[in-house]
Amino acid sequence: MTDPSPLPEPGRDPHLSPHEEALLQQIGVKERRRLRARRRQSEKIWFGLGTFGTIGWSVAIPTVLGIVIGLWLDARFPGAFSWTVALLFAGVALGCLNAWYWLSRERELIEQGRKNHNHG
Image 1 (cartoon, one colour):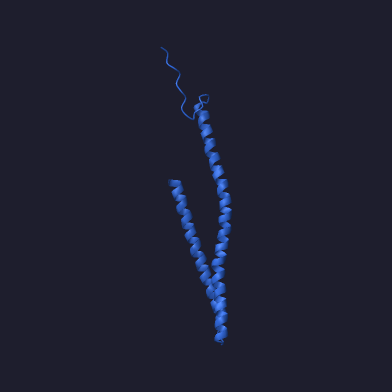
Image 2 (image 1 turned 180 degrees about the horizontal axis):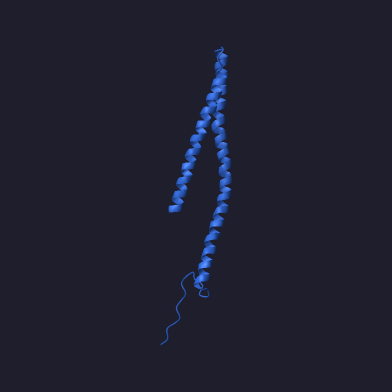
C-alpha cells in the first residue's frame, strides 16, 4: 500500500519555496501597512482641520464674550478704566488656556492609542 502525497497546508502554495513564501508574506505586511497609512492620512487631514476649528472657537468665544461684557460694563459704569480692554485680554488668556488644555488632552489620548496599538 502506498502513502498518498501529503496535502498542502491551508493558505500555502505547494509550488513556492519557503524563501518565496516568506517574501510574499513580507510584501503582504508592507502592503497592509501602506493601505493603513493611506487611510490614516485622510483621517489626519480631517482631524487637523477639526483641531484648527476647535482651537479657533476655544479662543474666539471667550474673547468675544469678554468684549461684549466689557462694552456692557463700560456703558453702565463709565469711567477712566476700560472694562472692554481688560475683559478682552482676560478672554484671550482664558481662550489660550482652554486651547492648551484641549491640545494636551488630545496629545495624551493619541499617545495612549499608539501605546495600545503597539502593545496590543
